[in-house]
Length: 453
Image (tube, rainbow, N blue to C red; front, side, top):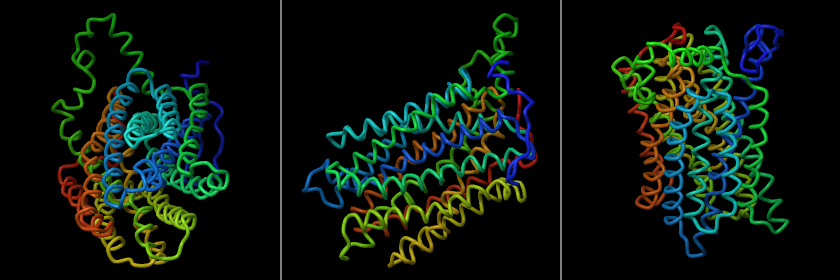
């Protein structure tokens, strides 16, 4: 049997209540591949946040001040988000043509290689270019992986499995924090530049690309679409505009236009909030501890602990979004997470003055601010038919990143103007109002099967 033909045999019971009562070997492989890909995706995208200060201090020279580092860091993060958006759109369209599994393995290879290559940067502009290339693969991984998982499980279990897949993002944050926690002191003790050593670790996910390409087959809905395309090439139906018009253009046809706009704005809100607010947590920790008698290694450890605390709550949010969405609906669940982020982000970053209080509140902020991302592989998959699913998901989730690229720039500029990360983050957190208002036009898809044509 071809690896592209998932078998219904070899079913076995699963222990976690969270998963379906029985899963095929292929479904296990799909979930494992997507989860691993998203873990390393998260790790590679987070590593720069952990070493942004040290890398830019090194590359900009001893005269670099806080404002200069914030401005250059904002530019690099903005360019990274643009690359993420471009990669998500390109690889998403590619996944609709050559398959989810093939595109997943290719995207992982791209982001792993260029994360490692970034360690060779000699100027901040070189680092910016390598982060852009890394982002191409990171954006593509989500578009391919989320479609692969959504199409490999029945509707009854899809939301919980997709939420579990999204929890890999939190696991990747933990992994990045551990890398920073152990690699930085090791590198310093062995006379390596710590931030370069951290980025070199990011190349190891490339090994998983070979596993995915060899072991993970394509989902049956996509295989049916591929078979239909092959038949249409030889039939009179080849003139059907559904199959002759550029795929990306079809997500803006009348039947899907509103969904595409709504999906993009919801993603824009979440991504802007993540990169303009919580991704500055490591830098906020440095500001919070400034003036105290801590060594550089101790501050680096405190950054890691804060990142772990943030993502302890994030993992809970990722896992619970699915059950909440099945219980109260997709729109009300998005509203719950956006409102929590809107209220909590200003409180945490503007009022907290000591590190212990920050550690206690970060898990709650992570629950809302990060947990909302489980909604996108659930909701966006339900808006598009199989032939356009990866394209639609990739575009909405990643086009929002082009708009959200203004987030790090805004935060960096506000730091220069207002003189503190706390004040800057408090202002940009108002972005969650955009998501709340957008939900007025969102379709409720609770209880509806995935569109398949």
